[in-house]
Amino acid sequence: MKKIKTLLVVATAALLTQISFAQTKSMSKEKTVMVGGAAMYPSKDIVTNAVNSKDHTTLVAAVKAAGLVETLQSAGPFTVFAPTNEAFDLLPAGTVTTLLEPKNKEMLAGILTYHVVAGKVSAADLVKMIKEGNGMATLLTVAGGKLTAMMAGKKIAIKDEKGGVAYVTIADVNQSNGVIHVIDHVLLP
Image (cartoon, rainbow, N blue to C red):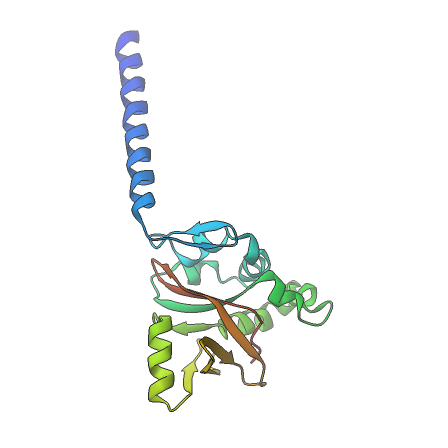
């Protein structure tokens, strides 16, 4: 009986090792984009990838504080304009700390969902929409606000309703439930 248990444990360990190796091999074949020092895997969802980016720790903390983790892990698809930590640092002193307070959860959720568009919109899609719109494309956010996409030379610029402009610094970070475009400023509704 002891021999059977040992064989069973060894067989299970071997099987788990093979599964882990197959998953690692499968992931290594994916076309990843490096964001914040971490590979972003197209087979993983937005939140699962974002937590690995050292450039998006503030955004991840905000998504958690706003209770949006489950939403951004759902099927989507979503297009997320993801501000970096440096983008959050450009806000007036104390803004992020205030927004992360539980009493401001609704306001924080509104700001974060203002960075999200329903559907998967690639950089090529944005450029096409901008051209078709004679230099501008209006995007309706999940929060119900509007963003204006335009070209600034060869860069895609996103303007918020207050006139603030963010530039896409890393485009087309594909996810299992959408796409992320990294931006250099926080957009405000």
